[in-house]
Image (cartoon, rainbow, N blue to C red):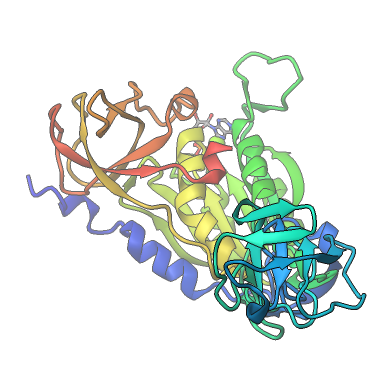
Length: 413
Ligand code: AMP
Ligand code: MG
């Protein structure tokens, strides 16, 4: 059998991503907010430093500030004063004397070097130094770390633990960021029950809305949760219309395949335009993407593993582009050997859940989490990576090389 003949009508993941991203226009509205409120927000413009860092020349050591010409092998220099961090020395500093200085203290005018205290001998009438200092020794210059006016962050950077304290150290109190994306979310299915309610005959809990909501919150989106919508054409149509009026992006789950109660695709077609709805990936073949009047629409498959995977692989990059996060990078891929055989049929790009670890030799290797059914959500909690098996590849024997994609923060946190 020609392995790819069945998939010719299906879009590859990269083709789908290209289509998706070509329709994503970054939100243009920005807002000025306090630094203390800016965690996880995305900078809308480059940020430059309003000050020099350090703001003044200061000592890198506990020791003595000297003029070079005063220091000779035999000279004993009396201490003329002291400079501490936060307490500069402003007194008179006679020639032939030195100043006691502590780490972080402003270097007094005229000082050419700081000699560390380990190289100084304290005598009754002053200090004798065991080395000849070089000009500038142990002095941190003003602006040495960051020059006033220099760019510290580009536009499109995410503000996190590395960035916010840096801005705080520059005295930046407010930042200009893109507004948060509004994402409306609903699940479809007569069988779905809300978490916390008892299950009736034939019901299952609504996993997808919860999983997607968590991932949206990770990405700092404003979530508009429209709940569970019954498999009823007009109820789904109403949900589409309401979601479209409220959000930048509408995400549904379920009802995208070709069953009798699958209305998602039909209503997307009726109220907007379908861009594509079939992907050559596993899990996650039915995934609908298109446009509504005001928003972009992503219809996730109903099976929870498929919903989470397509969200991760397709919706995540889409939202990152929409919210202006230009520094975002696709999850990295690496090649390792699998220690377990992996079942696969040629035809679709397969994202199996795997456990990546290092062996006794310190080499990375991967094994399967076991059953790979698209309803087996527990595979996610055991896994820490996807094993990405190429579209044309068949089953894999233990010991073969495979591509692995470690989960990023969206699935790991
Ligand atoms: P569907 O795409 O609507 O045909 O759903 C495919 C499978 O996923 C069915 O077994 C559904 O019961 C299941 N399913 C659909 N939506 C959810 C959900 N929100 N949470 C858990 N399972 C779901
Ligand atoms: Mg359904």
